[in-house]
Image (cartoon, helix red, strand yellow):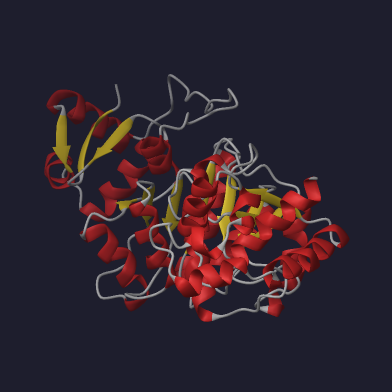
Length: 370
């Protein structure tokens, strides 16, 4: 019985001209998944949006034969399937109108993990983009978070995110734009094998589906839909990462982006997202904690308390004294009061910040930490 259900679940996703939204309408109208394939052409034509060609495609039996062949692949390679009406279908994705009817996964992963982040970006990543990606994931672990990291196994930021997650013992999922009988790009095959052992490869395509350009646009909705938030690390003014950001926004999911330098073509997309309020600007994990309401130290660990009395230099004592008297001062005002140049005062303020004694405010304004 279970195998028969799986046959229909796969088959409905293979009907030419039937997308996920139409498939769900057909099931609702017919009263059951199996019922879709047992309706007459005449009855199907009564369904709004179903024309002659589509009705003919539904009544053909070839998709059922393809589904049977796919079941053989699933059983041989221990693939897990998630049907959209099943209890284990990813809850976040289920809320997206155009979510796939069925997903396939190779690996062992909880797609309803408490915290899920998508990290995506340009295929032509710069050293800045890779550094930001690696640093972010390191910070996430240092702050005792263990989110599931989602990306697309592509060149650039995607593969950097997967590798950083694996290096930091975080589970990661690669969403593919093709079937599970191949890996694209093939150079990432070894990383894909690691991902299977520490997460999963996920797709909504059957095994025979080859990498096609349109498939990668389609898979972006899964990347966005599985996640609490999508992070764009680095992107030019066009690219798949921006499509993922648009999809995430359409799902009312959070979108974050790292800013780049003005007129830097490699970050122009991120800057545009931020400028048009399509993404919140982030600089590190503390921004994500704030925007998503994460506990900053969920494991119960806390930063080591700074010593109450620290040995300060004469210049540091002077800065503390004038800030105590004035409340808030700009760096220029501090320089005037203690008669030292900015080049000398900046490292003093930085040391006091690291010591937890001084707080930096917007506009290069400083005050004592209460």
